[in-house]
Image 1 (cartoon, rainbow, N blue to C red):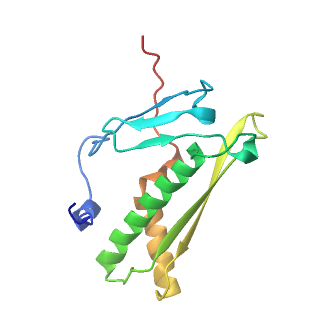
Image 2 (tube, rainbow, N blue to C red):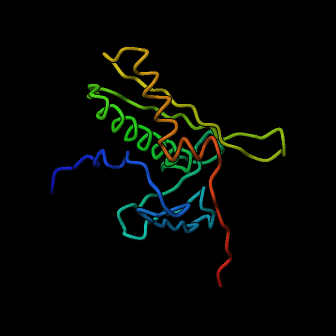
Length: 164
């Protein structure tokens, strides 16, 4: 197995071109499993087969637990993306980043506006040994760079299509 490589700082170069230019695209399909319900007993499988997880409703929502759930997957994705963007900015600034950690806490709950459901995400960044003012500047810049943070702030272009 080859050693993981960090992305190039060239990812920080400004882009000029089409309104959106995809650099990577993936698909994940969820099937309902035994309960015929994606959250309760689903199987999530990526188009390349690298992701294959059993989805289970957490005990807190009345399920049996025993698998991951959409909130955990979203928290992991958000934290990984934010950490990666922060690492690129720290590298560009010459800031040591070895023991940094990003924790994203995602809550699933009721939305008083429409009476249905909503998500809330809280990000905690730990950057030991980095001057507080410099760390705050890096975090503010990461919020502008990280697509998950941008999505959380501004929304995301999304389409829903029913296929035959």
